Amino acid sequence: MKLALRRWPASAAAVALALAALPLAAQPNRAPAPPGCGETHNQYGPFDYRTAHPSQRALVENAHFTRGVETLTKGATGPFGNDIGYTLAVFPNHPRAIYTVERLAAKEKADPAFGTDMTVECYFARGMAFAPDDLVFRMLYVSFLARRNRIEEALKFLDYVVQQAEDNPLTHFNAGLLYFDMKLYDKALAQAHRAMALGMRRTELRDRLTSAGRWKEPLPADAADAAASAAPAASQTPP
Image 1 (cartoon, helix red, strand yellow):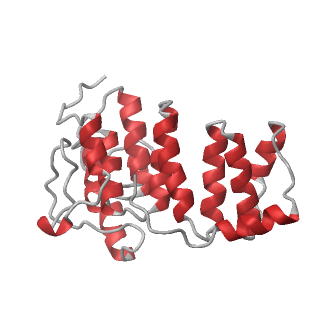
Image 2 (spheres, one colour):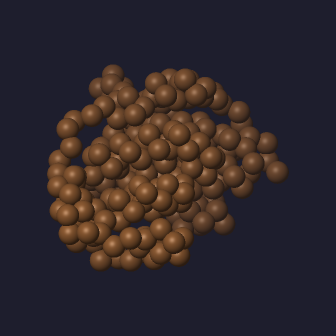
């Protein structure tokens, strides 16, 4: 096993501080790392992965986040960590890259992984600070926390996602799946009902709840309440 190049390990307090939006204007050519997480040095980007132009995505992904890098089977320009770290420096909220760096750290049994700039949690913190309204990226962090049995923290972040999801049935549906994975069946059921009220036709969440003996058909009044509760939530500071 390769030894990790140990960088600036983040304390829990440092990562928590990073979850508030950071002043990007202070460093216009890069998304600054959260306090205690070190620094990155690329001068391209940062860009929001959701709205980046296809040419911007292609420029980075064709050179650094290739299929071989994403599957951790073939490097591109050097160690996997170099290419994944560069990708996340340009696109701090890149959903597949954050999942890949987590898998790399697990594979190498080292965090930070060899060639990366910072720990996996620091990458998550920077991505959320850079794009605080990216609920998909935030749910990936919920999964990260849940896999480490940090349920109380995961619940705080997932509750925030639900409050911000407004009338997006897919977000409510995915939140329900995450609640189910954490064995919070009542919350999962409420999300299933809410997603259905908003037009979601997929049945995976209902099927899982049924298998667990936790499914209940929504009453007409419940469906109306679910739709009403999906109305735009009041502005709230992200956790």
